[in-house]
Image 1 (cartoon, one colour):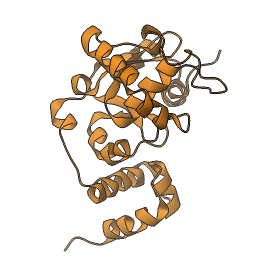
Image 2 (spheres, one colour; image 1 turned 135 degrees about the vertical axis):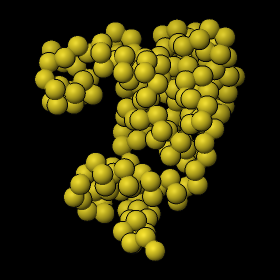
Image 3 (cartoon, helix red, strand yellow; image 1 turned 90 degrees about the vertical axis):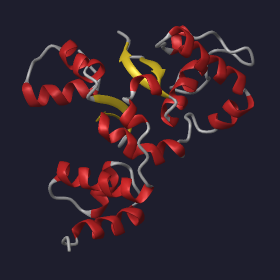
Image 4 (cartoon, helix red, strand yellow; image 1 turned 45 degrees about the vertical axis):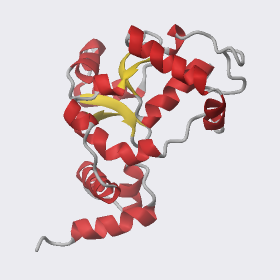
Length: 203
């Protein structure tokens, strides 16, 4: 039986368990959310503000899809408004775009609606509220999912990177600068001065 990788992580720690229990913790407790971190990841909710600078520069997939979204922004607006009015939706719940076919040829993203919602998720407009049986994400407006204190918290980029590296160091224990940088997909050149500042004793 094949299962998504985050279920395997829990299994490696605790052995057999009810996967529905993990789903409740991730999607119903308010303590976690999904976001692009190392890759698509489940993160503590308080980490969400630290990734704001990443969301602000998010590049949609497949490559070049940002230009398509800009040209056909009316479909993007339609998708966001559908979620605003109807509540959490998956790509399958959205109508076909009028400017092209539903399918994205030669792309593992599969469909235009999925690519649109994933891009808006990467930018922070949307957040994940759950998964369907086929593991497709269900999206809602981020402002309705992320608690107010985290949604409106703004952390300066350098301070965010310092805290992300602190999180990486706690998780890794022993690591090179490249290891710590890669934990949140940070450039090593940006990470090194933050690591140096973290390693200085407090005055």
